[in-house]
Amino acid sequence: MNSANFDRLQTAMDTFSLFGKIIISTPDNNDPNFVQTPILLVEHNDRGAVGFVLHFPLKRNLNELNEFINYPPIPIYIGGPVDQEHLFFLHRRPDLIDDGMHIMDGIYYAGNFQQALMHLQDQTLTEKDIRLFIGYAGWDPQQLEDEIKEGSWIVSEHTASYVFS
Image (cartoon, one colour):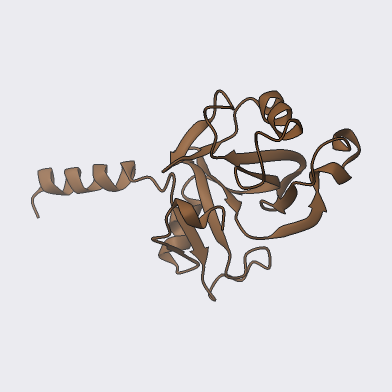
């Protein structure tokens, strides 16, 4: 391979992003936080990666938290081991919640939380439209790429419907 082709290949690899992809831990992943765990990546860039474990319920609902006692019983999920003091959310209603970041096929990350709460309270937003998380999964720059190369994660072909299943 000549040097120009090598440089183009290296540039493509450097700009490859897993943003909006779902990764799944393999049996080679020894971290007890991630046992055959699907994670939706909502950020992947030169600063690292951020994602949410999709199907690990906290076994508590939003209305069981003191500050949200007057809200419907929306399930809360454990999004990962980092920053478990804050709520994060994914949703499918950009028509109701401003400023969300489009992640994949009708799935949005975050947005105006006050609007989300208002629509939860008046029940125009239901648990079919929103997924609440405490914490997130995070990786330093190049860490996730290295873990994929070593076989700890695979990039899945799951579609957006999997996120809310």
